[in-house]
Image 1: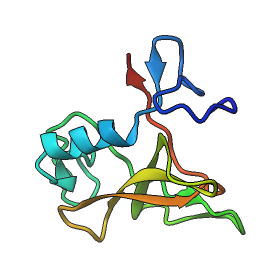
Image 2: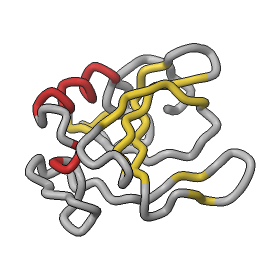
Image 3: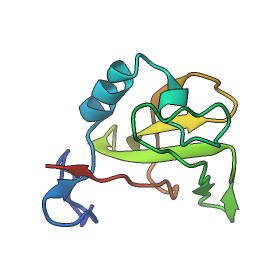
Length: 118
């Protein structure tokens, strides 16, 4: 996030946009009533995309190896730090038919970033 630990910072996002905070991800989960299918793009395992979020199962880059979970997981970093080693992210999975998780995980993983308009 351009060496900033301030939640909601612009980071790699274009001007007028920011990396979502933990709270903004919670708001999204509440808006879709916890329905992960509402976030999944149509064609992504039961995805309805009723939210317009259009999540694709892009997998992630593992810190000890290559890309993994392509076609089964979509992980999106938040700009909220959990502790010195971890940050919060939102996870939508092929295996979780309707669920969405927001969890902390090591900052060394290569997850996706979605930008949110200011």
